[in-house]
Image (cartoon, rainbow, N blue to C red; front, side, top):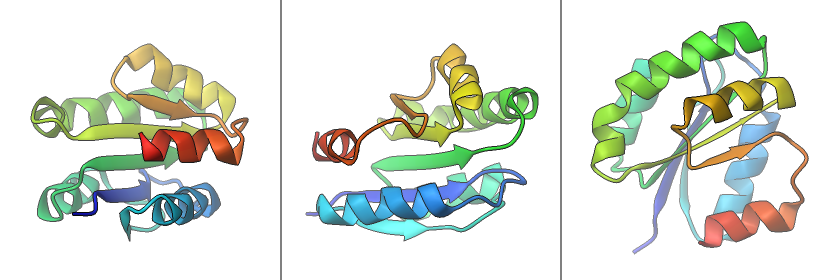
Length: 126
């Protein structure tokens, strides 16, 4: 059975090119993919993850690091029940935002845009 990944640009972020690229690579690696779109609320991401029994939730944010820090903290807190039942979480953003995501210690993998395609595929293939 194929694994499922749900992904979106979180909060007020409308930058989705990276999300779309990630999902395209996930399809190549054999995943079912669900794209939620730009500027998706925390609750909508988590509802979609639950409803689709997502194995992996990917979120992206490319705006200010200060706003990201608050938003990602809220996301991690709201996602705790999914996290505790084994759902995996990945994040992608600009290097300064990725640094804030690292500080949370919540995401199993953080991408800052410097990764080669092969690295992303290796992560998705396990």
